[in-house]
Image 1: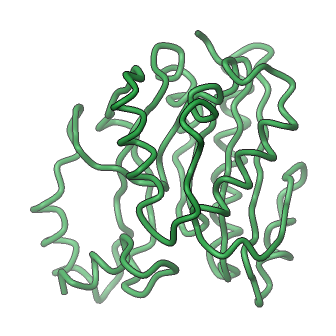
Image 2 (image 1 turned 120 degrees about the vertical axis):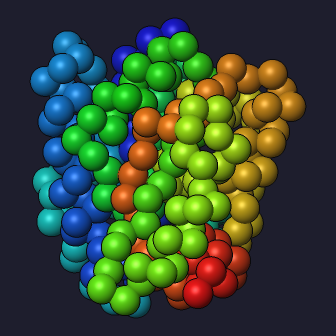
Image 3 (image 1 turned 90 degrees about the vertical axis):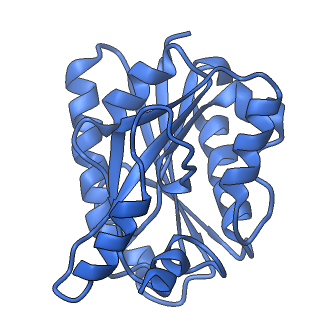
Length: 228
């Protein structure tokens, strides 16, 4: 079923240095989708979890973004709160609402939401890929990452920074669990076990931070650090 609304959810914990760039890229993707798909509705929700920096200020640099704040305690709980908020505010039924998930340290390409919308018309779950940013001091680490990472169609990667799911499917599966890590992996496992229509796209990619100290105990940043 073709989505009539796309709801973006972005959890953030002390991301003042990266959040503005993330939201600017999302706004460009939102405008591109609105110009391309007639009558589509788009929302963006930022979930501030235990932030003690200026993330709240940065979250409001782009007009029209919903911001919720609290002490959620884990990235899984923060994502779930954001999805719940977005579905409650959606002007479409859950079956017609597409949830596009990303992270505050991630920038999306202009056609990101358009690709999610197109893939979401035929699937209940979409898995994208990531590409770490290149910096002057991490060339060798990225070479090792690239050698092990296969971003082809049908890939096995699961990234909360690039994951789309139909609202009704999300509700049926019980959503993201209140986990400090692997909340995305567990949701995808349940979706596949339940027989959800899913696809893994190598063309649907985002650019994410190449930092080696992240916000979760054993997330993508930890993996990059081990490569070094």
